[in-house]
Length: 361
Ligand code: PMP
Image (cartoon, rainbow, N blue to C red; front, side, top):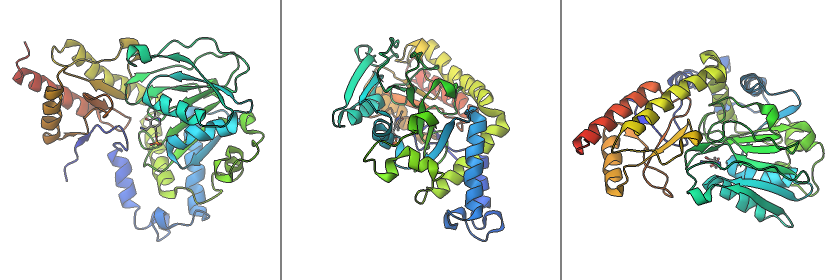
């Protein structure tokens, strides 16, 4: 069966070698006579998968040994609550507002009793077409939250802010493992798996141990990082199949040469599309150059009817899920790690032809 070019923002494209390995091992994993879905999470087969997944992620992201790696559930959205529940000891936290997902994180924190939530920078005035410079933070806050990559708006921070020792918490859902970050610059990193890591249902949390040394009182067990860490992310049944596929994805990234190698490919892929958007008189990028994401690339014709026509013709030609998020319209190409470069070249050729047909001069 033909595979399409899938530009979905998540759940997103997985690499064919990973899918083929899943297929090959589906009926009997490693001589067990069972699929991974059927293995007990307490079996030595699954424990090995879990250990390998963690070791590979540590290696790929160069995670220091004083950080815990957790494989949890509930999506990145649960982290909007879990992070303040665990880390806000003084109930004073700060946020950078860079669009839809950061706003959701802010709203969830604001729901918490007696929580002082301050938004210290925002690109709202610029319609979120860039990311704001981050000012100095007060040193009595528990942490500063940023969204490294804004999936809907297509903007990105490529480095961590400097905060005078205040822990930085980062939602890396849409660019974890796509470009290099120094984990030690962050107190906590979280990401839903369904873009760059594997199937939906798994959420990765990387947290500095000293930040979870004491569980805050009254925390439900499932929401307690310290307890999850103590139990090796197996306080209850973990999302076993998603963790297994994540392990295969980590192996695939390692074989390609690791995150620096994949970042170079991602830069090449993104440049193909951004360069065309610069030269086209029909299509353009609404995002300021310095803040342009490598993984989520929105573009518009400026005419909603024409955008619709483009999406419909592109879909018919095998370029699927290019419709922009319902909140912003236009188009969006998500180019995560597993998206092949040939797909970007083919998309640009298709856009050129569409523009010619629409009478681009
Ligand atoms: N944060 C960001 C940056 C996202 O892109 C998303 C999902 N698209 C979320 C959070 C929410 O993730 P989930 O659906 O896993 O809760």
